[in-house]
Length: 419
Image 1 (cartoon, rainbow, N blue to C red):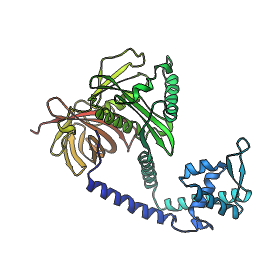
Image 2 (cartoon, one colour):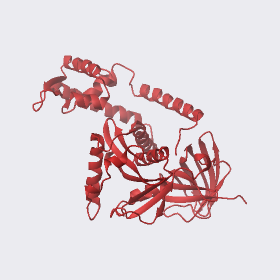
Image 3 (tube, rainbow, N blue to C red):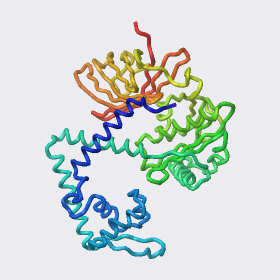
Image 4 (tube, rainbow, N blue to C red):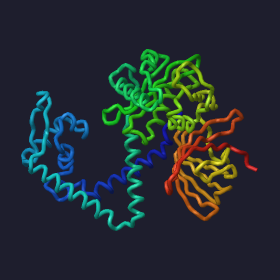
């Protein structure tokens, strides 16, 4: 199970984030009441943007996270400037719509022009490589911040949010499976609750974007089912986060083993489970959709419930890695302290490499840079899940992707004794 980072590391990371927020908000002019040189603060400029071609007030409140009073005051200000007008929706008299006037449309166009010019001015001193690096970092930041703001909560599998997710889940499988998908195969909501089950729904800005459930399959065994993430929220790491939380739910119910089945048409699902430490097992049950089955021990397999420190341990890949440079001759020497991990590695096609990152429970998140025997350097990003082998050695189940070139994959490294 994953846990919170060490308190010292978390405090330092929070300080770093706050420092960046202070710098960036001042640098792009968020602290002035004349955003981009116009006669209004950022909040009103953003409201003009959100209204766009017209928007219901309730939708504006949800998108901006504003309360009714603040939104009303901002709208009155823009009305007073002749930029916005309000009307009642034609189809529902209870719904109020905000629209831009002709002057408001012109003002939004000017705002867009100034905003683009300000961004271009900020980027101009950088080289093309530096600009690409900044944009790539910005995309990673956005992805991680989105993941951080997603909430996951347990609720009945027959709740409105759960039904919305399960409807999306069934529709997608019906489209992707060659034989289609019969929604009657969905688990009984009663099995996904109470003392023997759980159902989780993930929300982003109030919108359901993912789900998953567990139910008791037998003594000490849980079955994971209906793990799904909306297409708009994929690539954030939400599937892995839901999986970890469902495993925690299983442990709290005294279920030490999680079992599941997936379809051959969902290779990305199988890759997720393998990278999370699941091993393939023979098919079980009578579902025609469970064509590839997996199992993982989530409690009781590691003394004390958490893998020990990586500090001072050496690892080696169990096989050559397709699409990568690490191979069976590559050895990793790990160090770990206060939630931070690092390793130096070499061997095979890798002349020298270094990785650095963080540990959260049994999950590692790190970046690596390496020099190969041809004299070429490359960089990448990796998530790794720690498990323990029957003989007490540790195993790392890795999902990696290059950042300096195209390509991604999975690999497994196991602890070896120092010679």
